[in-house]
Image 1 (cartoon, rainbow over the protein chains, first blue to last red):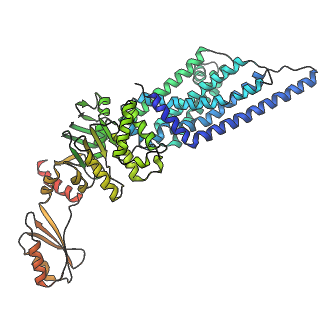
Image 2: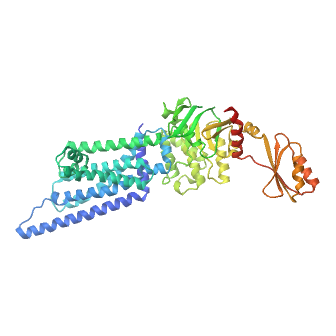
Image 3: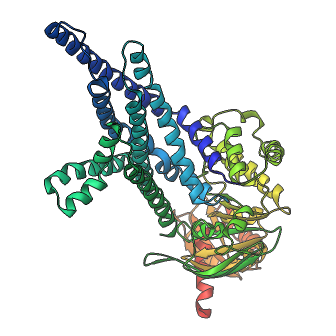
Length: 256
Length: 311
């Protein structure tokens, strides 16, 4: 019998009795709401100006005008808030010594790591699904192509899950939640900077490696509406690597 | 039930445990006795499979800790020094979670829950959040957690530390009531506690086993000399010499004040009556005569002293 679901249930219970999830959720939804309002207001201003110029009904590409910038800024918000969601996962267990209970029970480290990872992915997916209200509401007033939006949400899910797996690993390294948060923030920021660095190295091998390692290129392609196996492989392998690293960190903690 | 052979554990360069071996029979209550840093917690963590030993082997209920860790974990209930509690959960939620990760089936879990909550006296607080419970109750939840899957072996790391005297008695009674059906190892740094509940005492000092014995035997070994404290009303310089002349007295020294004396006597020779007579006839005014309790430091001093030639 696999106990991953037991760990998920316990984690969700612990998350929802602590204020952290509510605070993070409120901030995330408020900022995304404001940004989308600003994007829609901007688009309608432009539409009005175009109509005055051309004296006809202007057709704007809402995918390009609203959703792509919105997805881009959501990525930045995730970089800041997701480390706060993952910081307690292992750090708290180590601090409160409940880790001794887990590690002396007949449950595998793989089940513990998977359970904890999936619990934060579930919470994040829940938060993300609430933002779907934005395209749904907009669909009542405007027409746009749904495919890039669905792909955009897939990108957000993968992007967030990758950040969560990084946070999971960071949390397994320390018993201090603040350090865990900063560590995962640093690692995510590092991956982001790789993207910027890669342009500096141009068409060299190093440039290609950096741009592959960074999520920027993969994320950009997905939110533009391009589904590419290479990008999916990037996210899945990244998460698998971080899962493995967290597993190793826990083993190292026992063997030290 | 528990068999430990040549167990050694190093933390980096520091040897926390050095080649210890002992075995414990089914149904025994055994105490690990030692000062802080002696290696009690390390030994327990090795027994539970929380960490692997540097060398040596541990067998619990016939299973090797390294080769079949899952079987060992199923057979062990462990209460670490700090009870491993999720403060945001209620007692029932917490015990349900622990039962599940100990791989109990739903019916079994339901049955055990009722039994354990009753046994550990948690009925009144079972739907309260653990974070709101007192230290004593938390310790009981910790004990309930160790018992939930009815393990044949219980490992309790300092189960009474930080409790008030009444709570200590309650926990001790609870542990005693578990004897027979469970094999119990507990650690303590109180000699009185070890002798009060255990059938066997393993004394650890600086990573070595200094003695393995029953509390009674240990007591007689320690009573090679007894120490008496005497307080009189009037300090009398002649008294010191007179006391020293009583047969059976090894040494007399002045206590903290002029009118107190510390008298060391031979074992098996009760000099108290003679001593009182002397004080009374001298007219010094007897105020108090007491035997000094053996402290843990004395135990170590004596044991390490007597063990030196054999090492």
